[in-house]
Image (tube, rainbow, N blue to C red; front, side):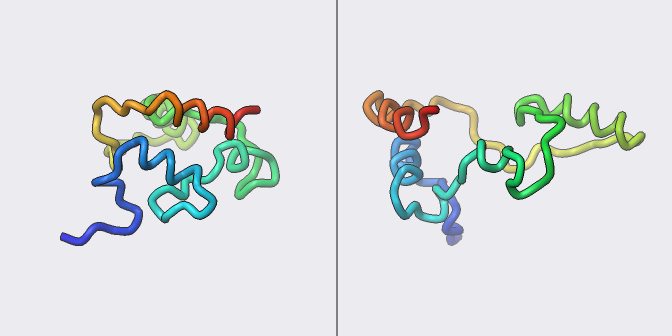
Length: 100
């Protein structure tokens, strides 16, 4: 089975971070900037509610109350649970690039 260009199936976390920091990241590492996504004037309107992905149950409860309906949303595109160690030097470089 052929993998999509966005697949990270055979990519280590170190390689992913290294590629995401590169000047021309491959499609699997083009993750964008969360602060730009959430800032006024970004791709959407002002943010009034923000939920962590890991707390999807809270987001569903909020939507159920707001929309007055019951939701049953499956968990899709969930990353495998397991260790994702990052080389300390690479982490320091990442933090320096994304500081502030």
